[in-house]
Image (cartoon, rainbow, N blue to C red):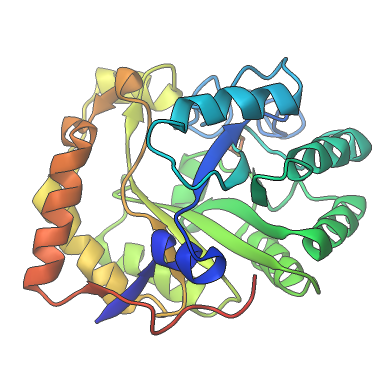
Length: 307
Ligand code: SF4
């Protein structure tokens, strides 16, 4: 059984290892500014699920410089993807956002741009901007779906229906340039059993999805979920159990879908549970060992041609 990791995908596309630089476009989110609600998704932190980005008040060029300094020690390649991470990065004045995207890709070391957002926060004008952008560089749009199950989506206050997501994926994938859709999903959400989680993967297989970021549910400080968990703790998967689930996910996943992430990656200082996630080296080694044992291998057989 083979799957394509982000590293392999980047190597196939750019011939070398590529680092992602977390940036902040200064956006908010319709789920936080009152348009849909004020509290945001139940697991979302005050920084809009982007703990690693630079100061949002700085110009993009300055943010890029600072982010490069952070990874300079481990990054020899000097080629990067500008990753607009916090909140909904297509939500706001389109002309201002376009300028920020352009500023990021004007850096000669930036080889592509990744934009995290919600499927209901992409205006007609923004679709046009993304199309233009995708004709100049590699663009990835990252959509936070988390689950296909309506009951869980309501519980987590996601604020849009599955059909809205499906429609956005199809539209984005239909864009003529180099654009890929990466979907964020969360496993181990309360009320979901294994079959329900695998149904979410099965649904993505039916859509023109380029990549996936899989996370186990992380309880982070400064979130409404933390309040619920601390008042009434509920069971979370142990590492071994989660790795077993990951194997089933990889076996179910369409092989051309690039796997960008396999666990939650909240900042260690904000993590409440499960604590095993913080030991990134142990988790990575355990996943590799278990995958080796069960013949789940990284491989380049299925590199997607688009983007
Ligand atoms: S859509 Fe993203 S930024 Fe908005 S509340 Fe949900 S997790 Fe936070």
